[in-house]
Length: 322
Image 1 (cartoon, rainbow, N blue to C red):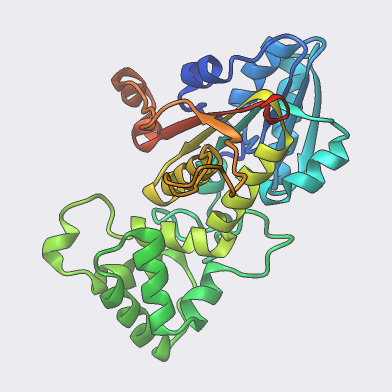
Image 2 (image 1 turned 135 degrees about the vertical axis):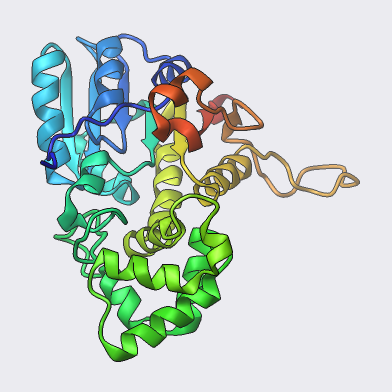
């Protein structure tokens, strides 16, 4: 029987604790609360005088996290907020906090969202093509994308968001198939994708529909736009010395994180022959590592989800004293 529990094993937990280094009395904000695996451990370190904030757009996650906090860290003050981290400004105003010391973004999809067939995230279970993280506030489903986007847009989404080498072949196959009847379920789509990929290529690289499903999930939930907005808001709200940690799971997310961190850690951009700075740019962040951290071999053996995890960390500088 499929479970509705959030049993999500926190990825790179030791590295998260080490890099964020939460201290008693600080404010921590888990922007992707999920099953609260990371949040509980962060809360233990800031309690009892600190504050743990958690954000998730999934009601089931918020309920499970609340129960877990009450059971495991009853002494920890916490506020859990329903929403997407792209609305971080509004959510933190609602939380009535002046600033945050530790931000965490774990961008993986929570296991219950994959396990519950109705959600439509899995290419292993037959389900309606949905893939919305927040069904109540998002009218766009994967079925809408598959059955109504034109071939060029489908190709672009599969190539850009899924890094799918057979993007144009799959898009063409989708259009041909839907001309006869709508594509309505996950396993219908899997068969269409398989038909669009040459047999020799289907034998390598994992499940043939994995990249297509990833691309659709990103498109349906506007994930990259939300990530950039959330990151920039986190930088605004971080206290001087505040730490921002992001765990991404594919190169598109990681590139976005690297781009924002690099841009905000750059100082003067004037030509070197100018005697004085006229651009006025000052670095806002200090980036902790040039290359992302990855999970240890031991963790990957115990938790295969960690295999593709990439962690980047930045620290907010005190620009007022610069």
